[in-house]
Length: 621
Image (cartoon, rainbow, N blue to C red):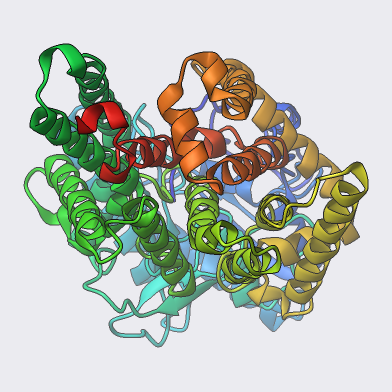
């Protein structure tokens, strides 16, 4: 779990009577109304009250967590935390709760305890505060009956840098070697803050009210050397998460700049070949450019492969991660350049695209382990998604898949077939659509609206059919029907097992879909208008569409020759533009899809243009 950093809260209540409203309750309500997530203060306390649960609160902010929708505390007491008397206070509260149950005034009992906060930024003072919190937690556990279930949760990071937070569960019957997980993350050792209230209600046997977004915690076993089991592993998990966030900006800046410098140098050298370079020098330059482009196209796959190595355990994890990602990218590029397909103009680039697609599909099917804490994957500190297809992965995958389909269909198109290329495109598209929208695999709501139109346009273009308004309407209708079917299949599963698609159906039935859609659309628009240079993405899409349509007019003869030599390239680029436009508009934070697509398509175009088989006649002399 992660916190966004320090927040301004009203002072903790010292003592509140049952008939009084928690001090500062209006501040919490106004803050929730201003926020984009439509939080409902008092939802947990109201559920405890409606579920006939006797509640005791210990510590000031525990009263806030235990208040009902009107702001009145559900608990019997609100006590200031005193280290010397904490265990005694907890024991007395336990006796009162037991008495309420014995007298028949409640069927269940729960205690909410605020142990205090870490507020110091100085490492030594922070360590002292942490030891004090550990002592308080030990006092609480010692005062509770052995049959009690205890959930210990750190709610947020007090400093400006986000970190993963502690979440632990003590059960009457411990499960050795287990780590916590939940259906909301599907990752061993990772859970969300919203899972804590759901877990409390599940332990108490109380029905979840409408508005709960979390899932009850579960026990899981890690199939790999776990980063999350035990305190040292939890520290390593936090180290991995913070390292990735710090490494992403300069890693991709460096990768892009290095590629540009090399490719610009190669292009400049080839342009001046007739005057200054020998034929052998031109060949060598072309090979350097081709190899650089292949490495660039393999970078997304390399960032995922880097997670096969435990880089987070090293003394310098950022350096190790960078080296691992670059090494993996080079290995993929070398394998693609040396394979039996290397003489075909599409061969090496298509091999990189195929490897990227297969790698992502395997990762989706096996729990997204390579994506979590990867440079182009799912980042726990952001908390948008923990499994399946994220926007970044979707951008990489749809780009690689469309280029792969164009490459595979190229021989059939060259021989004049019309139906066979359509079959090839369908064979590439179907596994992606099934896996990306599958509730237990990709679970991506926006996958079908992106994949189906893009591959349909590619199939029509390769089949030498025009994309008319009627055909576009049929494609849109088919996309909606497939998306509705995928959502329904997920919704029909048991509620605890539903993924993002089934949850959306539930929000429709609860009448909450409108605010969620509006929030996601607002996030996308806000990111497009406020993120640095993000406003250039729509402009870039328009510019690229114009250039792709007639590259010769824009003084790009090499791209024009490549499109003539590879007749399936232009349809693939046109289909990709459809995917990027739909992805930009139809996904929250959809601006990431065109941006990350460029990391694949631009190096692939360079590799196709600089392939040895594309050598112009002037360079052969």
